[in-house]
Length: 179
Length: 392
Image (cartoon, rainbow over all chains, first blue to last red; front, side, top):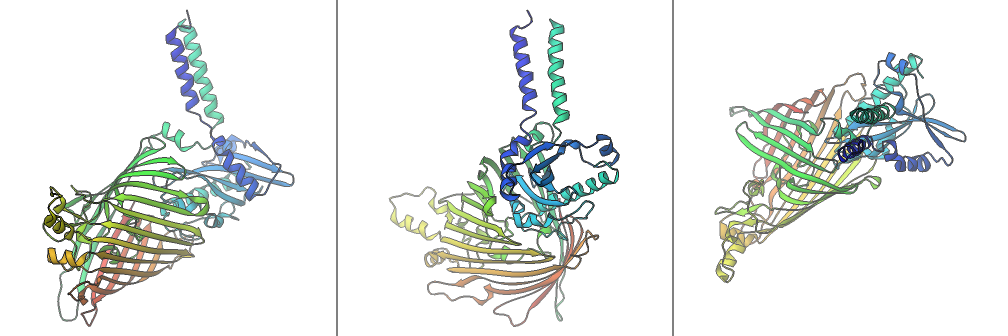
């Protein structure tokens, strides 16, 4: 008998494991993302699709990007890319989204999920406004061309470095003709 | 049968792998926890100082001190529960626990904290890492008025409303001790009353609260309150029917309330911070009469500091060279009750100016000159300080 109790338990356990290891991902932030797209980008009828860049080019560009990070946002007369990224706060990771125009100039940065109280100051929209208009390859340095923010030295530094790296990786990918 | 098992197992695995390949988009923190060893955060900070008083007519020895070296450990048990602790070596030979609390996230807006908690008052008590403040030593107000690092055992809530730019903390904590055979509160302030969670005694809990508002550009505003009574060993084993002893015990404590306002501003390499702390003690006539102390009925302190990073606009230069100027004014006994008079030596003014050269993110070389005098003195004393500050 194949489906004896032990097997059932094993299969159930394994499927649970495989399910658990891959929770909602983007879906987790869908509600918040939709809100940002509708309220802040003021889009009504829009669609989101995953876009795949050439993995070969990505590898050639030697950056930390992977194509599954990119999404394309399309509305009537609006086209943009966005990426969901993570950075490290004092004790917890936090998740943020970066919207780009089709030339990868930054349109908007918003924090989607910030767990701890420490450093939550970086979720302030006015502070995040400093990233808008930045272009691939640009050098971003916390406390220099990105103003420091009281109480959020670690998170502020971390999101700045993360976006700085993103812009540099995108530049490399563009150079390789990957985008 | 075995084969079938194997096939089932393999297919589940392969589904796994497929998922893993298509879902490489940034995983959420919970997933990361499941498959990495990032549950444990190790950090630390330290400051090694040189203090040298100087005067035209009197020679002084300098002091070289590994002032503090703190190891931080934080462990995430799961997505909701973590533990944070800081172990401190002070002046090499004293060991303290600076923080040790669990944080239990109840929802996006509220977390429970319990354990040895920092009292939120002013700026430095919570943000005391030496690379985050200017000057070799912490501001004197954050020593004499807010007895930094002020921490006691307690429990309460902390939380945030990011959309409106608000953070809050509210804790029930153990209070300062005012009497254990000796007076612990005096004209020199409340610093001597810290129990630090070391076999601390409690006779009445205190309330500590803070609101931080960060909804305005470049500016953060904090408003803190602290209310309660000090603790005393006199209440231990006290016969409730013995009025004489009850009155004596009541005379060994003071009521305490403190308010603190702090401001921090950052813009284009320029930074400004200020903290204003005001405190009141009641029952000091009885307390001083019983203990022979000279505690005042009020104390206050404030400082204002302006700083500028000279390399602020040099984006290719990762270092910063910050020049700062700080003005401090505090009095640990600004008012007295009863027959005594205020003692001018507790009213102090300080001017500190200096440089901080950040050579890496988390390493600052500092030097400053401090001028200070109390109201009974005519001229300022001078001290040169230099030090190394690290935070990782």
